[in-house]
Every structure is written in C-alpha cells, then in structure tokens.
Length: 298
Ligand code: NAD
Image (spheres, protein in one colour):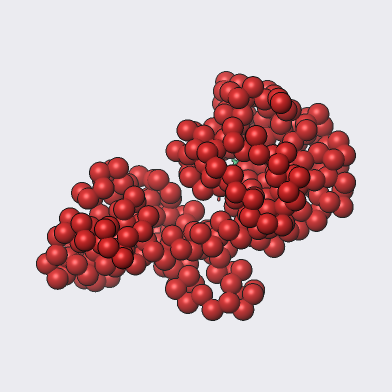
C-alpha cells in the first residue's frame, strides 16, 4: 500500500532514505532547514515542503532523521499540532533513550502514534537500502511501519516498548566502540612484538578474537581490503558519530547506576579523538592514537 510520508531531516542519511521511499512508490513530502537538501530530495523524487506544517498536514506517517534529541523534540512540538489525529510518527535519529521516551509521551498525549526506529548501516546502507532498523513502541505501530522500513533497509527488529530501539542501538554501539579499541590495541601490541598484521589477522579472525571490528572493519590496512584503513580511513562510520553514541550509552549507564567501565572509557577516548582532527575519519582510525601514545610513528 502506498502511503503519504512526511520526511523531515534530509541530510547524509535522510536524503537517500527519502529517495528510497519515493523509489518504492510512496508519496514523500520532504522538509529540511537547509534549502539545498530539500532541492536534492526533490530531484530524487520527493515533493519539496517549505515548512514542517506543509510536510505533515497530509501525511499518514511522519519520519524524522535529525542530529539529536532536542531537534526531534522541537520538531514534535510543531508537527504534533499540525498533523492529522492518529498519524504515525517514526523517529529514525539516534537520540537519548530518555528523549525518545519523552517524544513517545508527547505524541501519545497529542493523539498520535509513535515508534523510535534508529538505524545501523551508515550512509552506504542508507543509499543501498540495506539499513537495519531497531524499533521501540507498540506491535501495531511496528507492523504498520514495517513496509516503509523495509523500503529503506534490509532488516527491521521490534525490540520492545517506547525507547527500546534507542536502547538496542546504544548497547550495540557500545560493544562496537569497545571492541574497536580492543582490536586496535591488539594490533599495536602485535607490532611492538614483531608480529605482522596479516599473521595476527589470520589467527584472531578464525579464533576467539573474531568480531566485526576485526573481520569487517579491520583498523589496519591489508588484511581486509574493503575496510576504511585501506582508503586513508575515509568513513565508513565517522569517529564523531561513534563518540556521540558512546556518550549516549555512558549517560544512560550513569543514569541507571550501571557500571560500564570499558564503555565509559571508550566514550572518553572517542570524545578526545573526535574533538581533534579525527572526527571526520572512520572510527577505526583510533588505532593511530593508540600507536602515537605508545611512542611509535604513525
Ligand atoms: P546530517 O547532519 O547529515 O543531517 C541532519 C539534517 O537535519 C541536516 O540536513 C539538517 O539541516 C537537518 N535539520 C536539523 N534540524 C532540523 C529541523 N529542526 N528541521 C528540519 N531539518 C533539520 O546528519 P546524518 O548523518 O544524516 O545523521 C542523522 C541522524 O542519523 C543522527 O541522529 C545520527 O546520529 C544518525 N545516524 C547517522 C549515521 C551516519 O553514518 N551518518 C549512521 C547511523 C545513525
């Protein structure tokens, strides 16, 4: 069934996601604060909408893909009064679990339905429609959103009630951030012991050290030709975004009194790295910092 979808936030992720919805035959009304993003979405099959109200007033579903929780809550304040009662709001941005729950609550109070549905897969996944969606909210809302999510991605997992999608996202990325640092430390330790990158890779990738950070996104050039390390660490998944997700995870852990020692340290290391020149590089480039701190030349 083709739907009328308001899509707000047409940046690196939202632009191609909106284009994939239009390609699948849905009517997409695209809005962004940046006029050039709206124009690009227009060229990719969306109808340009000059305001939030113009985008949402005829929509069956409102999808947002914004930088952070405060942008989502600001959008909801405006959009919830302009949309038709019962409209389904699907926020795909990565935001704080508490902000996601607030957004759900505001939607419910305004007579709307809602899901949080953050993604993993990055810009490449957004362009190729191979994203994974992690959804939080009601079963009925998930079932209704599913065909739209599947037009933008390969997999949609219903993780539980309001905020459960964001919870899954930050827990997953905490594993990823910690494991990338662990893999990077192992390569630098191996270098100092005279072990070649290939030898360590050949052992660890088929032994108990195996993980995505090693076998797909390997932080040193050579063993995995498609990893960002082979193209001067062009992302991929930018270190600034990893720093953001780890900050959200560390904040949630602190709020809940959960002792995530490695997750919290990974958040600190990525924050330092992303503040410097590294923010735009793939997050695997943190191996260079470990090497520098170990007194070796990068
Ligand atoms: P981006 O900065 O490229 O895009 C955000 C867009 O939102 C911009 O075009 C901006 O103009 C627009 N915007 C901001 N405030 C607005 C408002 N009030 N109304 C309308 N438009 C507004 O960011 P992105 O890389 O597309 O990321 C979007 C979200 O996806 C973030 O929450 C990010 O954490 C998450 N995410 C990104 C990636 C990635 O690889 N880029 C991967 C997974 C998740």
